[in-house]
Length: 442
Image (cartoon, rainbow, N blue to C red; front, side, top):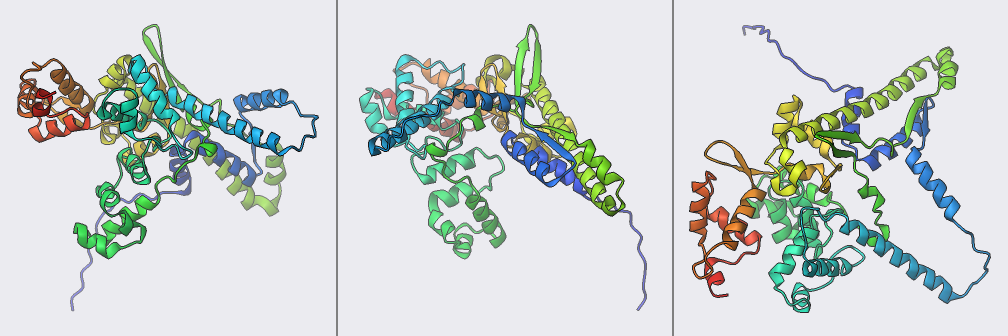
């Protein structure tokens, strides 16, 4: 049998330990990074970790504010009172945090504000809604669809899942907030949550005509979704602090990374001198120093990537930063990755669990990446813009002859927005706007 030798040139990229650590640090939220820094400080003798000045000041204030009681009261009612008082403080804490998330460009009228307040005060210990929307509508003399619109606003807030009416909706809210969720995850939860819980891979594969691999990865994803949070474990401070702030000074936008909430890191020179000159610890010293430098460089890489990403958002999303979410343009992770000349997974890691403070409120970075529909000119119109346009058309229509979905589609197409009647109907229903037939009979 004749043998032949074929020579080919192939480029491969190997992830070294340092790069892996950089990618890991990049995806950490502020809280996760803080914990990671302390863990590394405990493992590595060359690292000196000092509490963040902001945290130290807070803890000192709390120590000064604490007044020990000289009373030896053992009365059971007294203990119960303290427990109730503690619960009330926790409730006030998360209620305040939720109110702070109302975007400034959404001007709730007094009635809507009362309804919104009632919804927040009707959350149970899991932060699920514990009241029927029909009863709320009856109480405030409005429609159930109007109450549901306000609930949908609440369900866009952090922590993700707040305002869910049941466990199934809680999971669906999480999936709808994740652009990388498997395509069948929502349907698995909506129609076959029992099969998911029992790992019925074969049945799911048969029901949805998917491969076993696709089913397993979808079920694994669902089972890794965030567990139900309870109000007594709710810590607003872990959510309120944004990773980056954007402010306008005169005509310039300023970007500020919130590093002052993270512990400071330095190299302990005493341990360096001790280990560096000892032949018995030469290898250990080298590994420890490499690990310490990888941590410091990883944090610098995280800051640089985050800064560049926000700078890009400022360049592309000027309307959003000036006017608010209604002016948000469509932007994909792929687009940002192309502009910054990085992998799409890098952008995904950079926005994971991170928040940005804008003149209009605090947003997750993930929420600034939206889908769009291409117009005839090639320009992308955001779903938010199109929904607002549909809403305005309905609000200004002849009430005696309401616009049908096909008429709205025609108007949008004339404006250069290529959209189907089915999509118009879908957006209209999502905004809880009645059909033209039902609007005509109001």
